[in-house]
Image (cartoon, rainbow, N blue to C red; front, side, top):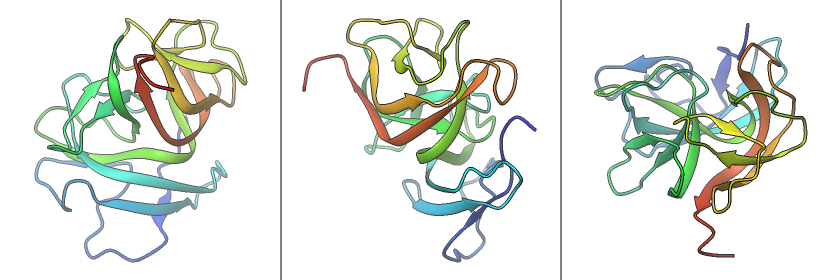
Length: 170
C-alpha cells in the first residue's frame, strides 16, 4: 500500500468523512482542521488535516496550494504564494476531501528525488523535486525518503504547515 488509508481522528467528529476518501457534497465545514493517528501498518504517527475543495487532475499525493478565502485548491505550480497541503484522495473539481498539513506525509515527486532534500515546486503541477528552483522552495517541508518509497513516483515528507512565498519574504 503506497500510503495509509487508516488515519483515525483523535477527537470524535460527528459523521467524520474518512481521511482517504472524497465526497461530492461537503461533509464538514470547509477549513475544518483535525488531528489523526495512522492506525495502519505504515506507522506514520500523528498528522493534521484540513478539509478543502478539490481541483481537476488531483491524485493521491498531489501537492496543492490552498486559500483560506474560499478553501479552494490549485495544483502547486511555479511562482505560487500561499499555504501548501498534500491530497489524501483523488479529490477533483466539485469534490471535497482531506489534505495533510502536518506530520509524516506521502507526496508526488519527480525523477531522482533524494532523501533528506529540500523541496521545490516544479513545472509539473502538483509534483515536487529537490532540484533548486529559485523562489519555489516549499518551506517547512523536507524529504524523508528518496523517490519510489513507499511506491513508484512517491516519497515521504516531514511537513509542518508548509508554504511557498516565491522568495518574496524571509
